[in-house]
Length: 422
Ligand code: HGY
Ligand code: MN
Ligand code: MN
Image 1 (cartoon, rainbow, N blue to C red):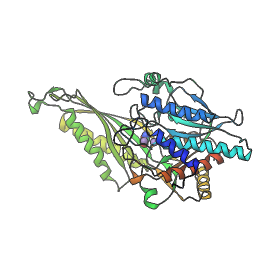
Image 2: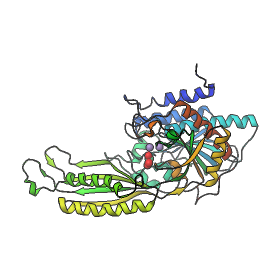
Image 3: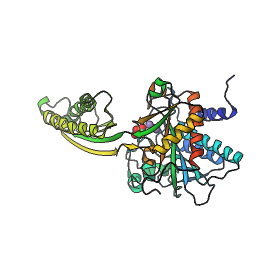
């Protein structure tokens, strides 16, 4: 017999239902933005929110806000994460945070009713559009439009590899809304760590104090299309051979720095025309560079541009390289970090501060309002893969921590707006 309370069972039962949407045979999920799976996720979110008496709004980029007003005209404590996933990925990334936010909100409503209190701030649970940036780049898209980092029109015009636009994808699932989103006073999010620190140190909750510097390189390698059988080797200008050397150069760039200082990979590449009898004319690739220190990424980027020029010379191909999805290092407000530490300790849980290498909607929101980002342990530290996992007990501890943080935030925000908040 499990020692879970009926309320804990509500959380776990909900997660078991959520993980069935877009489930893959290998135990993961495949839930790309703007797909039929995304629509099912949104309907799940809407039904859970409306069951609790929240009013659901959908804004122009498909962000969903389950709103509860306590004080007319007051700004909102936003709490949430994302329901979209990477391809063939994990059940927990983002989805756990939305589930936890819905249940933390439910528990806070009960506490407020029991206390007979109507807080000065309002509450909204958020499902952000396209946090993952898998089908439509860049990542953190919905929260970045909300934060004014990207324009709505530019993001609606972004297309996937098949040429489908964000606008058409959202229209195809009926979720390109027109509601005015709630005005944020502050933001809270809980997420799986996607690293090994909490598990290795046996810590219950991570409190994020800073986010890494990250950027993408949009790389195009241009060669010349020719016959793989009839063209003399000396006459070939093979874009894929040049791209292959560039992939290794991006990976090996990390060797020029201390262990762990830089992480880099090329995760996506498209070969044209991708025929077995044609020497490739063009390869388009996206490189992801991240470091706690912006100077490390900048130095690696400069060295890579030199390497690409040398590879182009040697392989007689041309490189075009553009920067995008650049995210500066941002510190989370100390007032929010210490508020979270206090709440977590009052719950009898342990915590430690750490940085996030991965991007999260809280990183975008932290650019406009005070944000609090919490982590729960990841089994083996893996994520963006089907064996991604977090233990039930850790999920439940996270809901307890988030509930306490949201209850506190409804009384006071941890610091002033960071810029022109909505
Ligand atoms: O960008 C990120 O790190 C996130 O996983 N989308
Ligand atoms: Mn995520
Ligand atoms: Mn992710």
